[in-house]
Length: 425
Ligand code: ATP
Ligand code: MG
Image (tube, rainbow, N blue to C red; front, side, top):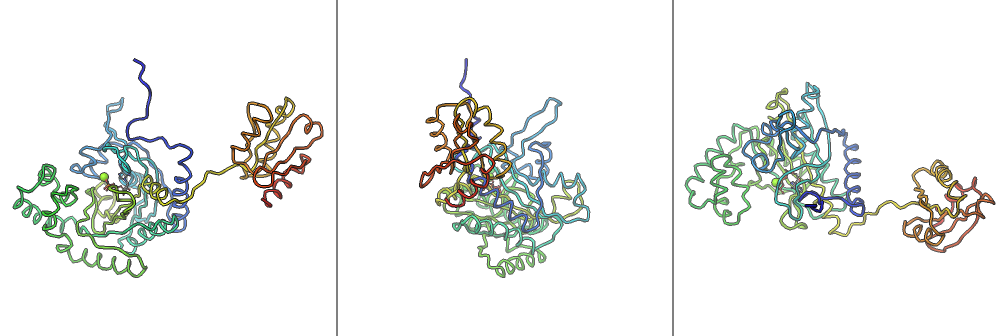
């Protein structure tokens, strides 16, 4: 049977009319990272499955049920990356970048999770990712948050709130975990199936349950921040003090535990009310143990990831304008002689007017149909060259937007003439 070919469910094509918003977000982030001294980094889309098992954690939703894992032809178990941090840490260790060094890095690109596709939740989605290695914090915890806060300002996004929490050290977390297990054991009859499963594997994840029926039991559970070790307590207090000192509003959310195992101390999440249920737009935290856990030197680290799809949806919902670049000039080539010279003329114009955008008409067509295409292209000017203009060594320069004037111009004067006309309209 000849099945109609379609994109894989939850994996979206990004058509040209959507891209201006993506470019706005990506370009803004790129500029900000440069301002803050973060360097771009790129890692493969595919890694050994073991990397994610050892970093994100065996008993997390991502590793348990969301990974695209497969055996390659050589028999290795590989996975499409569900997030960027693990690969970045792997690469930084592999290239010796963390040996007595500090690194401020960022990356972006597609991530893959086999989740139920819905508005704001896809199987291929895109993140921008920021990481700082070798800094104990809490000053750098605030710096990475400053970058995100500035990105919102730059994009004109106002409907976001910052939630923060501290997860303490693995040791203090173990003690807290024991208290939590005792508490949930006592309320076992009220737990849903998912939570019962988590009680065995990863009890803190029960706090993250999205089931409203679990709300009350969760509200009565012991609170992690009441059981922090002294150093983590001080780190958290100083972190909040620094946030306040640079005017970043936040709320402490003692239930914020995050879905990945590797977090320690500071965790945070920016949420919005603009997107319905998929309300997390940017999340992150400190992961002081991960580098050592993956075989590197003990290296403190912190990072965040934002979901580009969700940011783009917010910009579009807010009516933020983002336009595709339009050409300055559309070159209309009428008749055989003009068409023959056209490609070279277009190149000379691009040499003289870099960045302006010169669209040459391809495939011929009547003057009328070419003028229609010129109009549709959004260009400011049409440059019309027909047999008559060829013979005289000129082009007719027609203003397409506004006064629709037209004037002949010799070829070698075109760049200057075009620049001056563009300056006027
Ligand atoms: P959520 O609670 O929405 O599942 P998460 O805690 O799994 O988010 P992270 O793993 O921290 O999210 O990823 C960082 C950001 O990436 C999220 O804040 C969100 O904006 C975005 N994101 C995560 N999963 C998806 C997805 N399946 N589709 C689109 N964006 C996503
Ligand atoms: Mg998730």
